[in-house]
Image 1: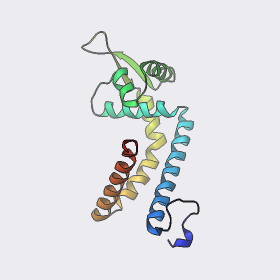
Image 2: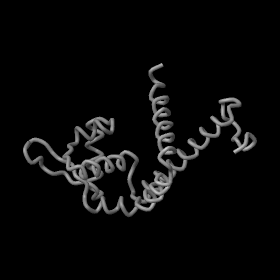
Image 3: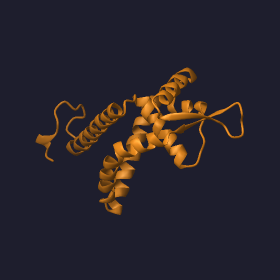
Image 4: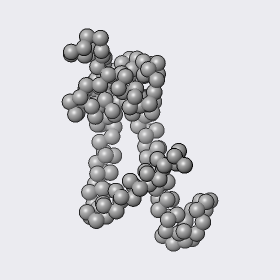
Length: 162
């Protein structure tokens, strides 16, 4: 990509290569956000609901039980918001509440098999294409990309600290 192809309006000056990288990263983030909107729309779920379902599926695959309090902490939401979220997800058939096997006062949240199937059906093609792209990288390329993304995350995480 040459300097004349770099998008107008970026505030970083004339560092052409850096701007090209940041533009590509911004374009990827925009495409990912659009994909998430399409996924939420096709599944009839809000962003937090979809994220909660993703976490519940991760816990399920790892053989871990999770309750509303732990999930609320992971999502960064209040217990009142968590109650509303769980009510919605139970009503939509994505989540079930079950009694905890050893603590009769506690509940466990589990994704339904239908929701696991729906997520796989909705996202499997996209995940396969993303995996194919990642697998096409040489080991050296992968190391550079992972290092870059980690440093970008650290740069963004550090914003509130300065």
